[in-house]
Length: 198
View 1 (cartoon, rainbow, N blue to C red):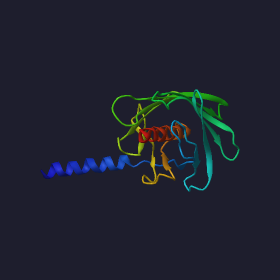
View 2 (cartoon, rainbow, N blue to C red):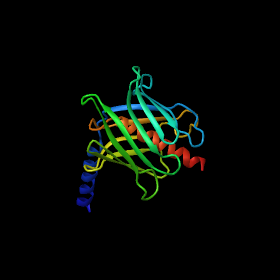
View 3 (cartoon, rainbow, N blue to C red):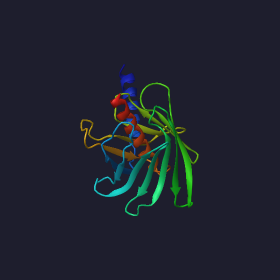
View 4 (cartoon, rainbow, N blue to C red):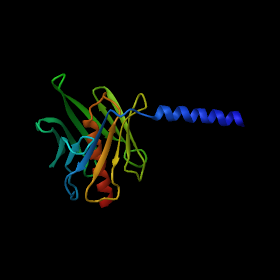
């Protein structure tokens, strides 16, 4: 019994050490507007201090739902997301500008229809990500699909506030652009709002 307890303690210690991730970047993402039914929100992305604006996510809803991402203060378009995700349909594509290659690289986000909660798979530039989220949790984790490695996580910073919605985002990799995580914040936030509205 003593040997079993020591072995169990050793395994738990190893798991705890392995689960500690080095944070590459942190952001706070603020929802800017009060959302009306079937309308997308705008977001402002700040650095970890919450004082310096880095990006703006600006939505439009016509025949296709679109979010344009601009950097700050230059206001250059650096990414866009478009598709259908308002009316229970989910088909989304996006493009992110790669400065090094001087080209736009396309990707997709698909909703996993199995089970409850908000589960998505992302493909971009030969990278595959998937999300995990508990049913009544504001937290979402993003994993590298092939390596099963946590690459980002985010959640509503103040679950009980209905006026000032702020998300805390932590990234653990440089392998994919952080803009993908901004898109996932916007999509999950919209789906939660949609569910709350009935």
